[in-house]
Length: 376
Ligand code: ADP
Ligand code: MG
Image (cartoon, rainbow, N blue to C red):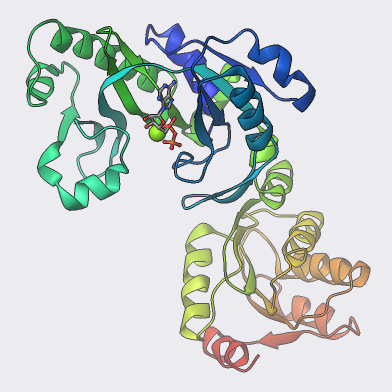
């Protein structure tokens, strides 16, 4: 789960990490009043779940009150076209006092799967796209694998600082790591972490992603979810306990089991097409759940066909067939539906589909499925 910069900055403050003074604004009619409370110059920042907002015109400096009001009106409500997250409507802006930047740094904690531990990444190249820095000048990126008793001093010294700044940076690193661990974050990133001309250290940007599987033990974090930022189909799926992820292709998939879902996406690729989604209905889905899943799938606008690939173990093939049949009856399905079922009550399932009077292509195996999908 992702949260907004302003929410991440509130969390930072709780952990002792300093951020510039700011105020949030969500309504156009509040802009003028809110702006009177902010010292100038200020920076107006689109609050959307995306990085690279600056490049997309979502972060702008204003020197006067009139300029600030004009920019705030431009950014609030705009459609931000970011390279990272596509088009995002801006529903909230953060108005923040501008700070005098002496040096921009990069600091993050993320999970290093190869080494099975958290990794800290530190660089002097703050404010830049860190993937780009890693490509162009990898020597400027310093990584420290975090074990129980870690000491970041040597890594910090690689940045070329001496004295007090080194110790404040180490303190920030410990505070940020505490947050990462206590809140089960999968990524905590400050880009840039700045040293100001007044020799203060401040987080100018704040990005935190949380591990969805740990949200059950963090009510405070779950409460920060902004549903407007989520894909509406994915949200709907979550309500019904379905695992659904929207993808860019044209073949809708309904599958049970994540492994089978991955294999099904490979099969679609072999047929020269791409999956429109990942949808795992789970092992013990009822026919109602199947019906819901199918409705969700079919509401995608880019569909060329639907491919249902089910292994009937705990989920019986006749339950699947009932669910799909009921869904199709109530929907105006314009695309071909290809069904491959294997396992418990396979024959009964096929019979239900064949006798439904509705159009299905029931295939016996994956090779046959590939041929049908190829010819769509
Ligand atoms: P993004 O990474 O999404 O583009 P940032 O919050 O990092 O958004 O802002 C982009 C850049 O704008 C920063 O790298 C920094 O140089 C500048 N910036 C952001 N906030 C401030 C601020 N309060 N004062 C001065 N400059 C800022
Ligand atoms: Mg940034």
